[in-house]
Length: 136
Image 1: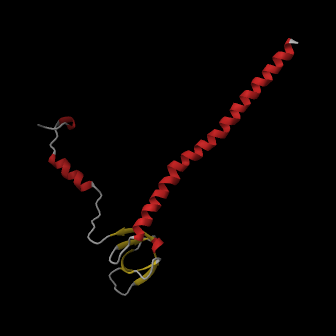
Image 2: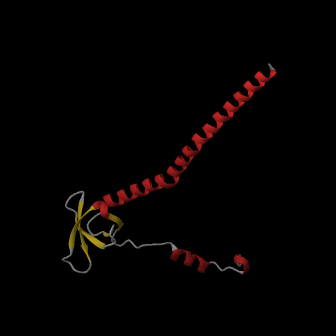
Image 3: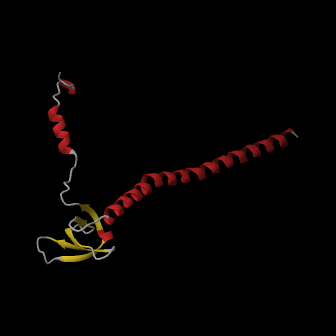
């Protein structure tokens, strides 16, 4: 009789361990999917929203870069899906393009600032001694 009770408790313990193991094997892939969403998909959605906002604000005279890598200037906007872009120095090279093929927009008079020049100016102003400490 004692062997029957021991065998039934061993079976119950094995079933409990199996349930926990199957639960872990279900949670682990779901956790990886959630992690991939926050690392890969969500930032791309934010970037796409920013690009859509920039492209929707294109005006005549803006310098643009196309998805093919061509630089041009917007000279006309006939409707909300198509813009006319002038490429190169030849004023006769005007090509209608869809807005969604624009990947960068630079407004006239807007300088491209990578932040390096201000860091150099700041480092010139501060005199540092040995081990990077400020001199008094």
